[in-house]
Length: 335
Image (spheres, helix red, strand yellow):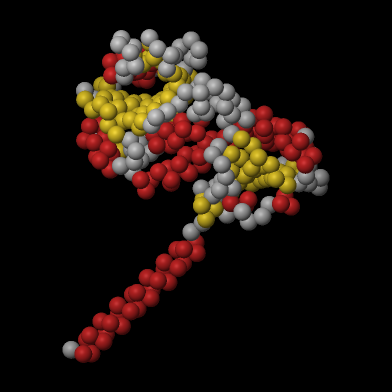
Protein backbone atom coordinates (compact mmCIF):
# COMPACT_ATOMS: atom_id res chain seq x y z
CA UNK A 1 0.00 0.00 0.00
CA UNK A 2 2.82 2.39 0.92
CA UNK A 3 4.58 1.53 -2.35
CA UNK A 4 1.47 2.31 -4.34
CA UNK A 5 1.02 5.60 -2.53
CA UNK A 6 4.64 6.49 -3.28
CA UNK A 7 4.19 5.70 -6.97
CA UNK A 8 1.01 7.80 -7.07
CA UNK A 9 2.81 10.71 -5.43
CA UNK A 10 5.68 10.48 -7.93
CA UNK A 11 3.20 10.45 -10.84
CA UNK A 12 1.36 13.49 -9.46
CA UNK A 13 4.63 15.34 -8.89
CA UNK A 14 5.82 14.49 -12.42
CA UNK A 15 2.55 15.71 -13.95
CA UNK A 16 2.71 18.91 -11.89
CA UNK A 17 6.30 19.61 -13.01
CA UNK A 18 5.35 18.90 -16.64
CA UNK A 19 2.37 21.24 -16.34
CA UNK A 20 4.59 23.97 -14.91
CA UNK A 21 7.09 23.56 -17.76
CA UNK A 22 4.31 23.72 -20.35
CA UNK A 23 2.87 26.85 -18.72
CA UNK A 24 6.31 28.47 -18.70
CA UNK A 25 6.76 27.65 -22.40
CA UNK A 26 3.32 29.08 -23.16
CA UNK A 27 4.22 32.27 -21.31
CA UNK A 28 7.48 32.51 -23.26
CA UNK A 29 5.73 32.02 -26.61
CA UNK A 30 2.90 34.43 -25.83
CA UNK A 31 3.44 37.79 -27.55
CA UNK A 32 3.13 41.07 -25.71
CA UNK A 33 -0.05 43.07 -26.26
CA UNK A 34 0.39 45.59 -29.06
CA UNK A 35 0.52 49.29 -28.27
CA UNK A 36 -0.58 52.49 -30.00
CA UNK A 37 -3.57 54.80 -29.97
CA UNK A 38 -6.91 53.83 -31.48
CA UNK A 39 -6.81 54.04 -35.28
CA UNK A 40 -3.12 54.97 -35.27
CA UNK A 41 -0.45 53.92 -37.78
CA UNK A 42 3.26 54.36 -37.11
CA UNK A 43 5.41 55.03 -40.19
CA UNK A 44 9.14 54.32 -39.83
CA UNK A 45 11.47 56.14 -42.23
CA UNK A 46 15.25 56.43 -42.55
CA UNK A 47 15.17 60.21 -42.14
CA UNK A 48 12.89 63.23 -41.77
CA UNK A 49 13.14 64.04 -45.48
CA UNK A 50 11.32 60.82 -46.38
CA UNK A 51 8.54 61.62 -43.92
CA UNK A 52 8.14 65.24 -45.04
CA UNK A 53 8.51 64.39 -48.72
CA UNK A 54 6.38 62.42 -51.15
CA UNK A 55 6.66 59.10 -49.28
CA UNK A 56 5.16 60.41 -46.04
CA UNK A 57 2.70 62.54 -47.98
CA UNK A 58 1.36 59.53 -49.89
CA UNK A 59 0.74 57.62 -46.65
CA UNK A 60 -0.91 60.61 -44.94
CA UNK A 61 -3.06 61.48 -47.97
CA UNK A 62 -4.52 57.97 -48.05
CA UNK A 63 -4.91 57.00 -44.41
CA UNK A 64 -5.89 60.43 -43.10
CA UNK A 65 -8.86 60.81 -45.41
CA UNK A 66 -12.12 61.61 -43.64
CA UNK A 67 -14.06 58.55 -42.53
CA UNK A 68 -17.37 58.35 -44.32
CA UNK A 69 -20.55 58.30 -42.28
CA UNK A 70 -19.63 60.63 -39.44
CA UNK A 71 -21.44 63.94 -38.83
CA UNK A 72 -18.20 65.80 -38.09
CA UNK A 73 -14.94 65.42 -40.03
CA UNK A 74 -12.69 62.74 -38.51
CA UNK A 75 -9.76 60.95 -40.10
CA UNK A 76 -9.81 57.21 -40.83
CA UNK A 77 -6.42 56.88 -39.16
CA UNK A 78 -3.84 59.10 -37.53
CA UNK A 79 -0.37 58.57 -39.03
CA UNK A 80 2.51 59.07 -36.58
CA UNK A 81 6.19 59.10 -37.51
CA UNK A 82 9.50 57.82 -36.21
CA UNK A 83 12.98 57.53 -37.72
CA UNK A 84 14.52 54.07 -37.80
CA UNK A 85 17.28 54.96 -35.32
CA UNK A 86 14.61 55.64 -32.68
CA UNK A 87 12.77 52.34 -33.23
CA UNK A 88 13.25 50.83 -29.78
CA UNK A 89 11.58 47.77 -28.22
CA UNK A 90 8.48 49.73 -27.19
CA UNK A 91 7.78 51.15 -30.66
CA UNK A 92 8.42 47.74 -32.25
CA UNK A 93 5.24 46.62 -30.45
CA UNK A 94 3.06 49.18 -32.25
CA UNK A 95 -0.08 47.57 -33.66
CA UNK A 96 0.13 49.02 -37.20
CA UNK A 97 3.60 49.56 -38.68
CA UNK A 98 4.78 50.77 -42.09
CA UNK A 99 8.56 50.54 -42.42
CA UNK A 100 9.99 52.44 -45.39
CA UNK A 101 13.46 52.03 -46.87
CA UNK A 102 15.27 53.44 -49.89
CA UNK A 103 18.06 51.21 -51.24
CA UNK A 104 19.58 52.50 -54.49
CA UNK A 105 21.10 49.09 -55.23
CA UNK A 106 17.77 47.23 -55.33
CA UNK A 107 16.47 46.49 -58.84
CA UNK A 108 12.81 45.80 -58.09
CA UNK A 109 10.69 47.05 -55.18
CA UNK A 110 10.39 44.61 -52.32
CA UNK A 111 7.22 44.23 -50.22
CA UNK A 112 7.39 42.15 -47.04
CA UNK A 113 4.53 41.59 -44.61
CA UNK A 114 4.53 40.09 -41.15
CA UNK A 115 1.85 39.42 -38.56
CA UNK A 116 2.56 39.63 -34.83
CA UNK A 117 6.25 40.52 -35.24
CA UNK A 118 6.84 41.77 -31.69
CA UNK A 119 3.29 41.86 -30.30
CA UNK A 120 -0.30 40.89 -31.08
CA UNK A 121 -2.49 41.83 -32.74
CA UNK A 122 0.09 43.45 -35.02
CA UNK A 123 0.70 43.88 -38.72
CA UNK A 124 3.94 45.13 -40.27
CA UNK A 125 4.57 46.02 -43.89
CA UNK A 126 8.11 46.77 -45.09
CA UNK A 127 8.45 48.45 -48.47
CA UNK A 128 11.94 48.81 -49.97
CA UNK A 129 12.50 50.61 -53.26
CA UNK A 130 15.34 52.25 -55.18
CA UNK A 131 13.86 55.76 -55.09
CA UNK A 132 11.08 57.73 -53.39
CA UNK A 133 9.10 57.70 -56.64
CA UNK A 134 9.30 53.92 -56.89
CA UNK A 135 8.41 53.59 -53.20
CA UNK A 136 5.26 55.70 -53.66
CA UNK A 137 4.16 53.66 -56.71
CA UNK A 138 4.60 50.46 -54.73
CA UNK A 139 2.65 51.84 -51.75
CA UNK A 140 -0.18 52.95 -54.04
CA UNK A 141 -0.48 49.39 -55.34
CA UNK A 142 -0.76 48.00 -51.80
CA UNK A 143 -2.71 50.64 -49.89
CA UNK A 144 -6.28 49.31 -50.23
CA UNK A 145 -5.39 45.85 -48.95
CA UNK A 146 -3.25 47.41 -46.26
CA UNK A 147 -6.18 49.45 -44.95
CA UNK A 148 -8.34 46.33 -44.72
CA UNK A 149 -5.68 44.66 -42.56
CA UNK A 150 -5.24 47.70 -40.31
CA UNK A 151 -9.04 47.90 -39.91
CA UNK A 152 -9.02 44.22 -38.91
CA UNK A 153 -6.30 44.93 -36.37
CA UNK A 154 -8.37 47.67 -34.78
CA UNK A 155 -11.34 45.32 -34.47
CA UNK A 156 -9.14 42.58 -32.99
CA UNK A 157 -7.87 45.00 -30.35
CA UNK A 158 -11.38 45.98 -29.25
CA UNK A 159 -12.60 42.37 -29.30
CA UNK A 160 -9.72 41.30 -27.08
CA UNK A 161 -10.49 44.17 -24.71
CA UNK A 162 -14.24 43.48 -24.48
CA UNK A 163 -14.18 39.65 -24.45
CA UNK A 164 -13.55 39.23 -20.68
CA UNK A 165 -16.55 41.44 -19.85
CA UNK A 166 -19.11 39.67 -22.06
CA UNK A 167 -22.64 39.88 -20.64
CA UNK A 168 -23.82 36.28 -21.01
CA UNK A 169 -27.40 37.09 -20.04
CA UNK A 170 -27.71 39.19 -23.18
CA UNK A 171 -25.77 36.63 -25.23
CA UNK A 172 -28.19 33.89 -24.18
CA UNK A 173 -31.17 36.08 -25.07
CA UNK A 174 -29.71 36.57 -28.56
CA UNK A 175 -29.31 32.81 -28.91
CA UNK A 176 -32.93 32.18 -27.90
CA UNK A 177 -34.39 34.93 -30.05
CA UNK A 178 -32.28 34.92 -33.23
CA UNK A 179 -29.99 31.88 -33.08
CA UNK A 180 -26.88 34.09 -32.97
CA UNK A 181 -24.14 34.93 -30.51
CA UNK A 182 -22.49 38.32 -30.19
CA UNK A 183 -20.05 39.38 -27.50
CA UNK A 184 -21.97 42.26 -25.93
CA UNK A 185 -19.87 43.69 -23.06
CA UNK A 186 -21.09 44.73 -19.64
CA UNK A 187 -22.81 48.09 -19.38
CA UNK A 188 -25.58 47.36 -21.89
CA UNK A 189 -29.16 46.40 -21.14
CA UNK A 190 -32.09 45.17 -23.23
CA UNK A 191 -34.52 48.02 -23.86
CA UNK A 192 -36.97 46.17 -26.13
CA UNK A 193 -37.28 42.45 -26.90
CA UNK A 194 -40.34 41.56 -28.99
CA UNK A 195 -41.60 40.75 -32.48
CA UNK A 196 -38.23 39.54 -33.81
CA UNK A 197 -36.62 42.81 -32.73
CA UNK A 198 -34.19 43.63 -29.94
CA UNK A 199 -32.84 47.02 -28.82
CA UNK A 200 -29.72 46.70 -26.65
CA UNK A 201 -28.78 50.00 -25.01
CA UNK A 202 -26.00 51.73 -23.11
CA UNK A 203 -26.86 55.10 -21.62
CA UNK A 204 -24.77 57.73 -19.81
CA UNK A 205 -25.48 61.36 -18.97
CA UNK A 206 -24.09 62.64 -22.28
CA UNK A 207 -23.90 59.62 -24.58
CA UNK A 208 -26.03 56.81 -25.95
CA UNK A 209 -24.82 53.69 -27.75
CA UNK A 210 -27.03 50.88 -28.99
CA UNK A 211 -27.35 47.70 -30.98
CA UNK A 212 -30.45 46.83 -32.99
CA UNK A 213 -31.03 43.19 -34.00
CA UNK A 214 -33.97 42.20 -36.18
CA UNK A 215 -34.88 39.47 -38.65
CA UNK A 216 -37.28 39.07 -41.55
CA UNK A 217 -38.09 36.22 -43.94
CA UNK A 218 -35.64 35.83 -46.82
CA UNK A 219 -37.25 35.40 -50.24
CA UNK A 220 -34.49 36.12 -52.75
CA UNK A 221 -31.41 38.28 -53.36
CA UNK A 222 -33.60 41.35 -53.93
CA UNK A 223 -34.06 41.44 -50.15
CA UNK A 224 -30.39 42.44 -49.88
CA UNK A 225 -30.79 45.27 -52.36
CA UNK A 226 -29.63 48.58 -50.81
CA UNK A 227 -32.98 50.26 -51.36
CA UNK A 228 -34.77 47.40 -49.62
CA UNK A 229 -32.32 47.42 -46.71
CA UNK A 230 -33.00 51.12 -46.06
CA UNK A 231 -36.75 50.69 -46.55
CA UNK A 232 -36.81 47.90 -43.97
CA UNK A 233 -34.57 49.82 -41.57
CA UNK A 234 -36.80 52.91 -41.71
CA UNK A 235 -39.94 50.87 -41.02
CA UNK A 236 -38.29 49.12 -38.05
CA UNK A 237 -36.81 52.18 -36.33
CA UNK A 238 -39.94 54.27 -36.90
CA UNK A 239 -41.93 51.59 -35.10
CA UNK A 240 -39.56 50.92 -32.19
CA UNK A 241 -37.17 53.87 -31.63
CA UNK A 242 -39.08 56.96 -30.46
CA UNK A 243 -37.63 60.44 -30.30
CA UNK A 244 -37.66 62.66 -27.21
CA UNK A 245 -40.98 64.37 -28.00
CA UNK A 246 -44.40 63.00 -28.92
CA UNK A 247 -44.62 61.95 -32.53
CA UNK A 248 -40.85 61.97 -33.15
CA UNK A 249 -39.02 58.85 -34.31
CA UNK A 250 -35.73 57.64 -35.78
CA UNK A 251 -35.12 57.38 -39.52
CA UNK A 252 -32.21 57.19 -41.97
CA UNK A 253 -30.70 60.45 -43.20
CA UNK A 254 -30.76 60.63 -46.99
CA UNK A 255 -29.99 64.31 -47.62
CA UNK A 256 -27.00 65.37 -45.53
CA UNK A 257 -25.16 62.07 -46.06
CA UNK A 258 -26.32 59.32 -48.41
CA UNK A 259 -25.93 55.79 -47.00
CA UNK A 260 -23.20 53.67 -48.60
CA UNK A 261 -23.21 49.90 -49.06
CA UNK A 262 -20.51 47.27 -49.38
CA UNK A 263 -20.69 43.51 -49.85
CA UNK A 264 -18.52 41.48 -47.48
CA UNK A 265 -18.15 37.86 -48.67
CA UNK A 266 -15.71 37.16 -45.81
CA UNK A 267 -17.78 38.57 -42.94
CA UNK A 268 -17.38 36.16 -39.97
CA UNK A 269 -21.05 35.11 -39.96
CA UNK A 270 -21.18 34.67 -43.74
CA UNK A 271 -21.85 36.82 -46.80
CA UNK A 272 -23.06 40.22 -45.57
CA UNK A 273 -24.09 43.62 -46.83
CA UNK A 274 -22.60 46.47 -44.81
CA UNK A 275 -24.50 49.77 -44.59
CA UNK A 276 -22.96 52.98 -43.25
CA UNK A 277 -24.69 56.28 -42.81
CA UNK A 278 -26.38 58.70 -40.46
CA UNK A 279 -29.58 58.28 -38.50
CA UNK A 280 -31.64 61.27 -37.44
CA UNK A 281 -34.92 61.91 -35.66
CA UNK A 282 -38.01 63.18 -37.45
CA UNK A 283 -39.40 66.04 -35.36
CA UNK A 284 -36.15 66.70 -33.47
CA UNK A 285 -32.48 67.54 -34.02
CA UNK A 286 -30.88 64.31 -32.80
CA UNK A 287 -28.53 62.49 -35.17
CA UNK A 288 -25.50 60.23 -35.25
CA UNK A 289 -23.62 57.54 -37.21
CA UNK A 290 -24.59 53.90 -37.65
CA UNK A 291 -23.16 50.78 -39.25
CA UNK A 292 -25.16 47.62 -39.96
CA UNK A 293 -24.66 44.14 -41.38
CA UNK A 294 -27.41 42.15 -43.08
CA UNK A 295 -26.78 38.39 -43.35
CA UNK A 296 -28.91 35.44 -44.43
CA UNK A 297 -29.16 32.84 -41.66
CA UNK A 298 -28.59 29.49 -43.40
CA UNK A 299 -30.40 27.66 -40.60
CA UNK A 300 -33.68 29.60 -40.79
CA UNK A 301 -33.83 31.26 -44.23
CA UNK A 302 -34.23 34.65 -42.57
CA UNK A 303 -32.25 37.86 -42.96
CA UNK A 304 -30.69 38.96 -39.69
CA UNK A 305 -29.62 42.59 -39.49
CA UNK A 306 -27.33 43.70 -36.68
CA UNK A 307 -26.71 47.43 -36.31
CA UNK A 308 -24.71 49.62 -33.99
CA UNK A 309 -25.26 53.33 -33.56
CA UNK A 310 -23.90 56.20 -31.48
CA UNK A 311 -25.34 59.43 -30.09
CA UNK A 312 -22.66 61.72 -28.65
CA UNK A 313 -23.53 65.31 -29.60
CA UNK A 314 -20.68 67.69 -30.45
CA UNK A 315 -18.03 65.03 -29.67
CA UNK A 316 -15.85 62.79 -31.84
CA UNK A 317 -17.52 59.46 -32.59
CA UNK A 318 -15.08 57.52 -34.79
CA UNK A 319 -13.62 55.40 -32.01
CA UNK A 320 -17.01 54.67 -30.46
CA UNK A 321 -18.33 53.50 -33.83
CA UNK A 322 -15.22 51.33 -34.26
CA UNK A 323 -16.10 49.72 -30.93
CA UNK A 324 -19.59 48.98 -32.20
CA UNK A 325 -18.22 47.59 -35.45
CA UNK A 326 -15.81 45.27 -33.62
CA UNK A 327 -18.64 43.86 -31.49
CA UNK A 328 -20.82 43.35 -34.57
CA UNK A 329 -17.96 41.40 -36.14
CA UNK A 330 -18.21 38.90 -33.28
CA UNK A 331 -21.69 37.84 -34.52
CA UNK A 332 -22.01 34.15 -35.37
CA UNK A 333 -24.93 31.85 -36.11
CA UNK A 334 -25.58 29.00 -33.70
CA UNK A 335 -26.38 25.62 -35.24
